[in-house]
Length: 132
Image (cartoon, rainbow, N blue to C red):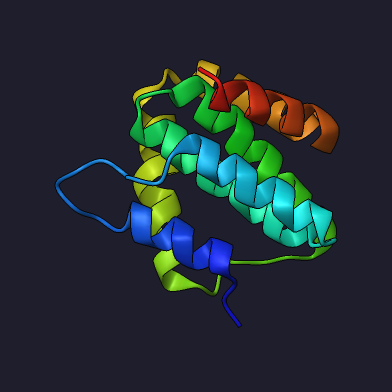
């Protein structure tokens, strides 16, 4: 089953010649709503979608850090999207490109910081990112 949030994320990140149209703020709202109804996996997926949107905006450092935070949270939950080809392609297109555009030591340090930051800190950073 695909949730509304996943469909919304996909529609705005599908390769086109224009940037994503779903706002960062919309992604945060959907993620927080998912938490309200107890779906932490959906909220983590929305955090990953937010990281992709940030990467599309050229906000690479935030994207790499929050993408790593989302990945570790989903791994902790046993929520694996690797079998979803279109989602994996989007991650590679946006997050992979963000990592590739950074110097390797910088990208490595940002990913490590994202993995170590914890879920609550990632949510705080995501909310802050939505206001910039």
